[in-house]
Length: 450
Image: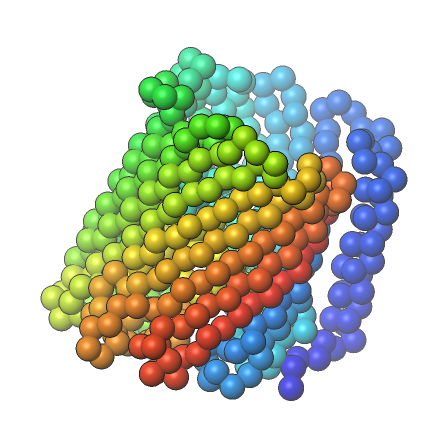
């Protein structure tokens, strides 16, 4: 039995689908520019992302199929003057056609609210934003504006950038993360105002340079997260300091490229945000990503890459220390595959090599394939998203192998993109002995920009 939208929800769904069709018509009729006559200081834009997802077996009971239709609409207005401006962006994220027992949360549902609302001052050399903003930081592994996930991270605060010459940049921000909310059952898609909390603070400082040898770029950064429980927010009481470095060389035909990122995370945290969990533990965790690739001068422009990802897990549940990496406000999609109702692998307690192949069969087609083998970084800690809620007896670390294939078609450049993907997870014998079987996930997605 799956969830049936009430008439009001059907109406909302029809409205969004009509919007999809209308926008597609608009995009087809005006692929280069809008017919709207706007003043030079004002620009309007928007996006509509619609995705159908299917999972052959749920992560809870293993007894049902899971499916969902998720839709995200954004509308944005930018005012740009010579040395100042303002931005207002609305976002509406909803879910339909979902099983009654499928876990649905604020990663999927966030009905109409303000995603961004800030003013800025500055010029080409510096800029300061004040208000609510979204942001991609570096590799997007620890702070990102979500693309695949149906809802988007936002932050209330101040965000600054300084350009030091032509090749160096300093970024700094201080913010209160925005809590995404809905009213009642998330399947009802009812609005409830988002909010931030003074007792949860997230900040960072990053230095970027493109002056490294071999056409390479580099980043060094510090991220801080401090939070404590309050009457309206239950937290893990995290006080985390994350220091990271990243080196990379962008892909070029007939050249090697690479990326290396490492992070050390120290501080204090609790194992969960449960009200009954009041033990504050020393926190010490680490992260590593390394990849090496080569782009061939050949038909379909193949690029072959080797990847390795490591994120620490809790080594000993009885040592009063938490070693599980906290990925803060980053995304797992670029490394570990789709999220949504799948999201099998995460950047915590994992050691995972992978091989990836990217192809361009035609100018507007892209094909992506990756084979990834997944192991626990430590056998003493679980991997909850796989259904493994406790450590594997006997210390077996192997979780299984994941094969992901994604095909993208740019139907109308900068306007309409269609994407489909199939991910298959071959569970290890250790997981199958615990009743966790192979899984496959399929999705079809349309992205419109107007």
